[in-house]
Length: 355
Ligand code: F0G
Image (cartoon, rainbow, N blue to C red; front, side, top):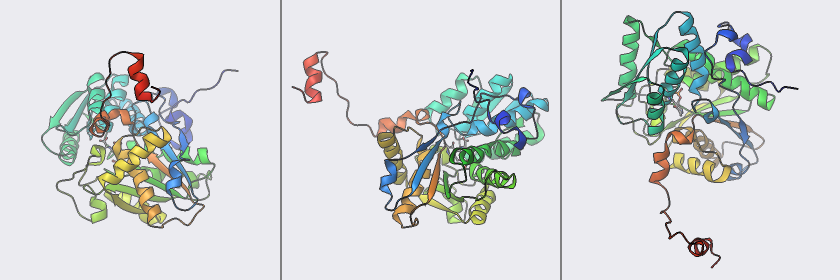
């Protein structure tokens, strides 16, 4: 019997999307990402809990953005759009570039100069997007593209476009299906705050449809140097090595607060060194390579665990939002010294300790 393949979120969850007809979707078969048990890292937590990573790096362009982009681009095409525009810290632009290429649209991406990782920049370039680097922050870039899209015939595909958030709800559907119910806690990194807003909407829609009975506590994690929601004010000069979430004035600020409050969750901040600890734990102990911003979710879990927030028995999911290959520089900045020897077996054996 032929195994049916995953068709992408619009087809798989058609009843949750009024349009488009799945046969007309612009899709790269996004979604259907693995929910991986973290059986080694969970030992870092002092009480017995269950811990999983929803590995969104397994999406076609290597991040969760594809879930929203398939819907936003499909609907833009239906409305007759010829061009797309977005501001980005890198992943939205990579995804817009890919889905735009697939739909035959022109794509303009506006990014903070020198502040997005090289893998993401390569993605925008290879898909033939026009890359505009602005000498400023993501927050400035977003303001510009919002104004442009208001007055000119280019479709805005940032998460201020509600189609993006509607598509991104699908991660909550999948986690619920994979676990058989909603988890007790869902941790995720927060930048522009669209994803926490969308994930919460997804769980609520799934409960309304009778697919799950309970809802998770939504826990958003910001980087300490870019934590406007935790601080309660705009951060003029956000700074963190997690460039994907280097945002000082998130568009979905209120959505994040609502998700945390309604669900009984919270928003917390973690330091760059806590992010790196989680990043290296995932890579070296679990075989999972995610980008630094993604590891903020696990860093948040570990921080809460060490503060005694869990009593035991909780089921915890953290979203790993993007693939580590997007940002190889972070690895090279912390790698051990290179080993280089003459091309002789004896030299290699000596390193292995067999001489
Ligand atoms: N993780 C990664 C890898 C991201 O790229 C982003 C956002 C986030 C987390 C935060 O998600 O913004 O919905 O709170 N990246 C956007 C971009 C801003 O332009 O690619 P959020």
